[in-house]
Image 1 (cartoon, helix red, strand yellow):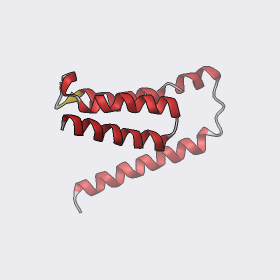
Image 2 (cartoon, rainbow, N blue to C red; image 1 turned 180 degrees about the vertical axis):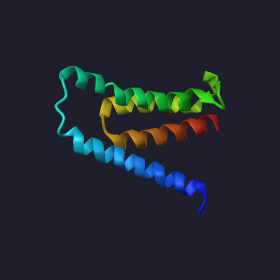
Image 3 (cartoon, rainbow, N blue to C red; image 1 turned 135 degrees about the vertical axis):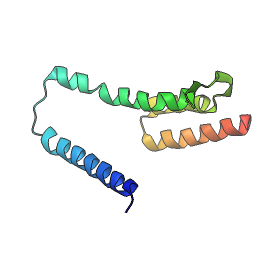
Length: 106
């Protein structure tokens, strides 16, 4: 078997163990209010770090705003997500906004 297979297996096992450990131990640990507040910022920071480069960069260079179709679709999608707080509606809106932007700038 190739090394890629073992890499995938090890990453999958590590991910599983990390999540299982946090679920098992996380319910037993009593977090202080300041730690809970600090941890509440982790998910938005990770999401921004993942989505920011996807929306703003292409091959390591900034995409000009006039050519950035994903950003034009992401902004109204973000508004729908903020307004509705529903994942399915947000995903459907994102697909529709992206399809509309691609149709217009096609």
